[in-house]
Image (cartoon, rainbow, N blue to C red; front, side, top):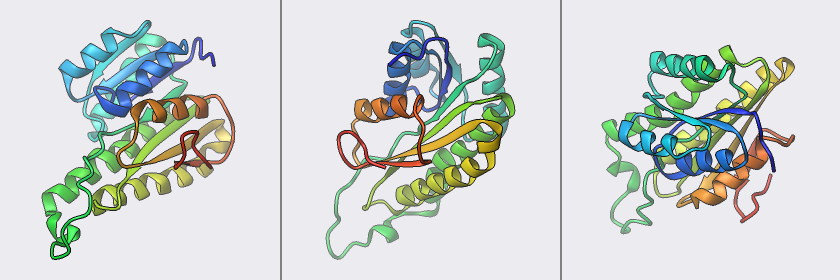
Length: 214
């Protein structure tokens, strides 16, 4: 599958799913901007791309999200594809019967996960839409039955995608999501994202099988 000439911005690209997506799109011929708050990690990923750049920014910060998109447009001339990924929390597995997972999530952990995943998805999507005339946005959500805050953030991302997809369809921007179960294979998710970037269909997908299913 070729994506020659496509300008893509991938968030959370310093490691894991985001790094795998950045490399997958790069291998398909896209010009990829890798974004992450970890400057060292994102420089390593961005520097290894055939035609890429590294953007150090916090996607959950609205001002930094806007500046990141502006930097990509200034560098490449436009933006065709946004892929939103965030580092998924490690799955702890089922706890002992006398320990409720919900009670183990403190206020700080709850707000941090919603900020780094749901806030980041909204702010980067909004910033990208201001710059895009057409194209595709793909948001990756990772759900875990043992982590209520992770599952809540993933559900929020899916709901955001459905709402934005309806809003932007007349403008020529296709918005989609990929939901993966814990603990996802980054390469598998990256392949699905690359497929969705060049195909048409419904706004939400679930990676419940090796090939993914609608």
